[in-house]
Amino acid sequence: MFFERAVGQEGARPAGLSAMRIAVIGAGPSGLATAIALMRRFHRPFEAWLIDAEDAPGAFADGAAGRAPTTEPARDLSVVPDRPEDFCDWLKAGLLAGGSVAALRGAQDLHVPRGLFRDYVMARFGEALSLRRDVRIRTFRGAVRHVGPCAEGLRIGFRDGECADFDHVVVATGFGIAQREAASWRAARAAAERLSQEEAPPPLTLVGNGPRLAAILLDLRAGGYAGDIHVAAAAGRLPPSHGRGEGAGGMTFGAPPATRSLKDAFRYIRRACRAADAQGGDWQGVVDAASARLAAVWRHLPQAERNRYRRHLLGLHRHFSIRIAGDIHRRLAGAFEAGRTRFVSPRDPGSSGQNTVDCREMPSARALAGLVGRDAAALSVDDCGRLLSHEEVLCGLSVVGAAASSLRPGPFTFAETVRQAYRAVLDIQTQGLASVSQR
Image (cartoon, rainbow, N blue to C red; front, side, top):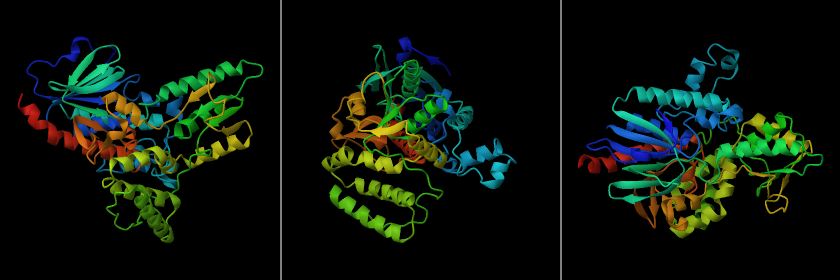
């Protein structure tokens, strides 16, 4: 593998190549999960490009970001869907073998450093690649400007003016399509260092209310930054913490209605949540079960109702679906109680300018629409991860991970991203083999 800066002549398709050519936009956890799924389930030769605007594969856990705990517990972080305990087993075989942690708690509930999770993902990536002598993986640094049809499939245009053609493109950019994680960390540290040198510094404003915001805020405090920090968040509250349960567990919801109204869908969800609460389910299990049922209802909603959900409810749904580790939640609460950290309105005049750092993680449907040159209000994603515009499939385009979650409801978990990746790969295999075999 290699990491290069320019396409040059590599953008041309080699003559006589029968292997399918696939681009994966994004080299973070979503992109790596997609590449692993390709190597495990795409049963013919292929060449895959892992494309990222900034990071090499696995760089999502470099530096301070790698010391931050994973948002989800180990039990939910397997990259092998038919082995949901795979990450736990990897931890037990290495870090926890024979140790007191394994004896007391096991690995299922651990929130390990992201750098350790990166090591696991890259280990599984290397193992999958070693078993595929008919596969070529290339890594490429380049900012994607546009994805559109061409004579032989899809063409990716880069911001430097170069382009490359592919049979299929998978958008797996995670949260980076709207605001890159590495940029948030660098900007926060630079702003804190600059403000620490001033005699009467203004507050440092962090925009967001998710796990990235939590990790950056605590890193600044751990690094000795004592200035005022304002958190500009519409929710005005901390992200919820994980419970110790197994998600929805044995909770059962009634069959979802075939409604075409978002109002009716949420009326059903509210009734189902009350029933689940009566069964003794905790709030986390109720929210997870509701998310799964809302995904089932989604396929019956017209595009106008889907857009209403994205405009008015997606942010709220995501806030209660994504959690942070319990000890991180307690440390955050302590930071706010200390008095030098407080919430402010996103419209506060002070929450803009050079002392403001964007830590938001919400992927933007508009950014995805700009990438493919379509109207954001017309975009949707089907159960196989295919991108649709006005209910028509955009051939050769799949969306996986957080970018897909910006277009439809469902569990906001890494396990769901892995499931999406495998469904997308199986669909690529079904849809793409005929066209490749004709060459």
